[in-house]
Image 1 (cartoon, rainbow, N blue to C red):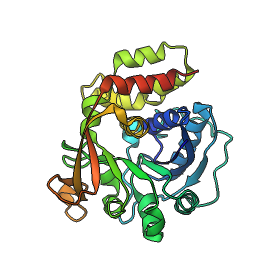
Image 2: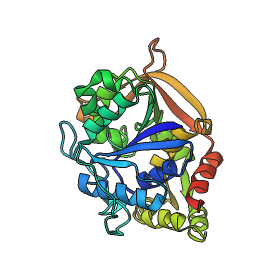
Image 3: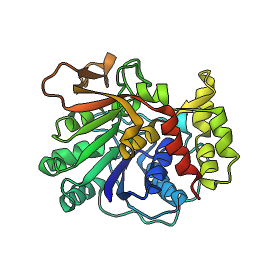
Image 4: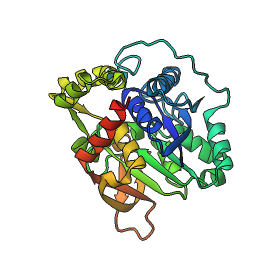
Length: 307
């Protein structure tokens, strides 16, 4: 069985991604490590518990991590996901424990206990991962792989013209993670925007299904839907589930490129921009630039509709 750790700044699309992983029988999610990003750290921890509760499978341990980026003030997306990150549902906190161990220490310990076996999936800013890499670089290099919902691929950003949200929140953290000698897969905003758009028909199909989980997925993304509607869109992109599905089912990816990735951390005008040198003889990452949209939705909806 494959072993995952999910690092999350848990808002609506993170929750859907976590449910997808928890409902896949070939995956054992060892832990959810939580970081501030979409929302503040305490709300993100609460939403991680909600994701476990809604998935209704098993309870991976939840660890609270970093509450702000390495060097900058926290930049959130509560205007996109709602004040609670879940479409302003303001749910009660599920009766699921939060571990006292810090997420950074938990990451290091779990990797040492399972060397070269853990596949890390990051759904938020890379602050937790960078701190762990600074504290125990040799241990972090014992990861099997890292899948990152991060960057813009070959396209434009969704937070600035050149930067994707997770990278923009803490670019210095990504710069540290890029130095890890671990296979890294980027699933960026360009492929998400192009192939992972959830239409009104998709939403209606989920809403009218017999699945409480599918109905929850529609409800928790209500703020995201309204935000995108103001931009003239009849639906929205699901970023984190795209990265998760690429990690679980790599056959969904139809085109990837090898490149040496670096990230801008100094210049404010393009802070968070990732540069991909495809001519490098020493690539440090793979970037997915296309995927099968129909297959993506099949995997996603099968997971949400599962009773």
